Image 1 (cartoon, helix red, strand yellow):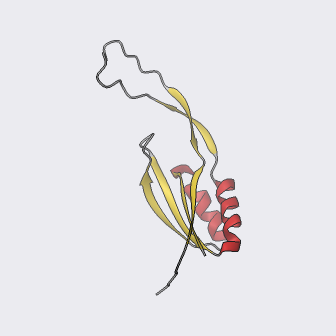
Image 2 (image 1 turned 90 degrees about the vertical axis):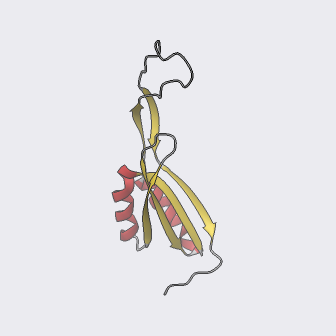
Length: 109
């Protein structure tokens, strides 16, 4: 048995949840916050048999797409902010960060 932990962007959350239900996977969905953009994320925790891990990974890959987003940079700390002009920066967001962990024991009460 494996535990799949997937951190995804909020925009992909509904699509992933629907795809997991359609494929008969059960998941726990948690609200989380990313450190880089300080934006909302969703973390899915999915328990599955070893032989179905690739199916879960494929669903995550198909449901969570990369996209471009304009982000205003943070003003410099300790520097002269008088001459600092913040220009939006184009960054890639989305996709998924996925961890697959072994499960030593599983109980359902």
